[in-house]
Length: 167
Image (cartoon, rainbow, N blue to C red; front, top):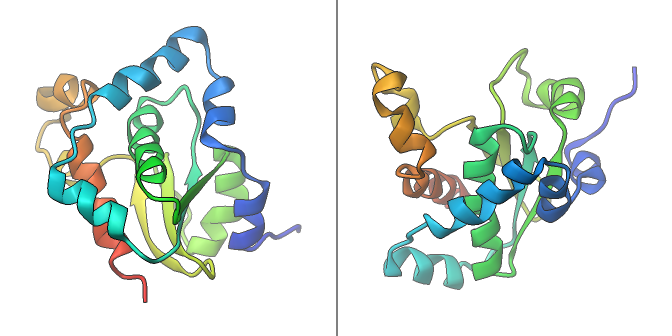
């Protein structure tokens, strides 16, 4: 069986823009809409701008997935705030075939976002949606708010919590 390490997976991935370009017109149109809904606090922007460690975000997901459209867009904004941040997107198929064995899992919900330090050590993972959404007793009650971007700040905070594990 062919295997790939995390660095190889990252290197075969595509840019966010290329991944978005694979989408339909309506899928692509959701990205700027989601982007406009990202309202980081001034403290968060200052923290991200002054973060002095290199962080790589490996995203396994597809543009047709609303969770990808939301959460990958948050990371795109991170990369625009600080050049120490980079991201690479691989397909769900590659995620299942190569990333799951690295993470020692049999199944995860997509997108799966792996936060890596500059040596490609795994700092942590983000699965599908922020924890506050996962922990909701009834997703149907908050689904519309979630898809309208009301939980993007929660995703950002989870990414920051993971990034803070960098040495």
